[in-house]
Image (cartoon, rainbow, N blue to C red; front, side):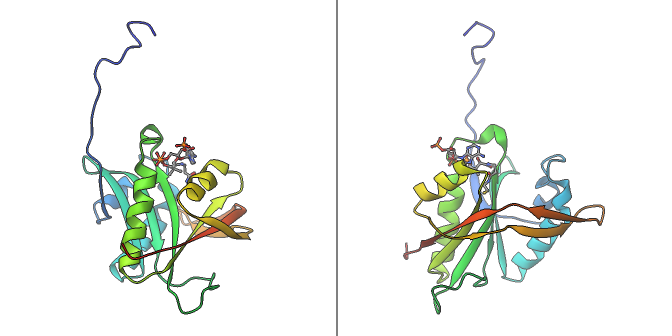
Length: 178
Ligand SMILES: CC(C)(COP(=O)(O)OP(=O)(O)OC[C@H]1O[C@@H](n2cnc3c(N)ncnc32)[C@H](O)[C@@H]1OP(=O)(O)O)[C@@H](O)C(=O)NCCC(=O)NCCS
């Protein structure tokens, strides 16, 4: 490591986990990286206000550098009838903040919130071409119980329908009151 490559300073930043607020919606586009999800963010936020979804964000200096969304209905995977199941999705952390435990903390916090709301199972999908994500979830207590062709579509910021094909593993975890 040369003198120039040595860190000039080390920055410690507080990261707070909280539910998204209206002012986060533009910021969740991450300066253009996720502009195509604009309508989806707005709809998810409306559904959070209606108590049907949660938008958990990792806030650093009032900017959402990480996110995990939760669908609170029981969903399609009802292998444990009578026990409420929450579906976790859209877990992502800005690239430069990865590897610092933020993704794991988002998972932990979301599990605590839904467990305290009476949910006994959580489900999450890992794209088959993303083995690192699957490994992260398995280390966190999830196990694969299904797979899905991962065909879905969304309306982008220009009103065009975009089709996604992302075959994935479906993992689940049983929750216990914390
Ligand atoms: C997956 C992700 C949210 C993890 O966030 P994070 O803050 O880096 O997570 P943590 O620091 O708590 O844990 C890091 C672990 O995640 C794993 N990981 C999973 N997917 C990863 C990815 N795409 N890039 C980097 N690390 C990833 C790493 O291997 C690491 O494991 P290790 O500790 O054994 O090296 C983040 O990497 C990310 O946003 N990836 C892109 C989006 C994505 O793949 N989301 C999952 C949807 S299926």
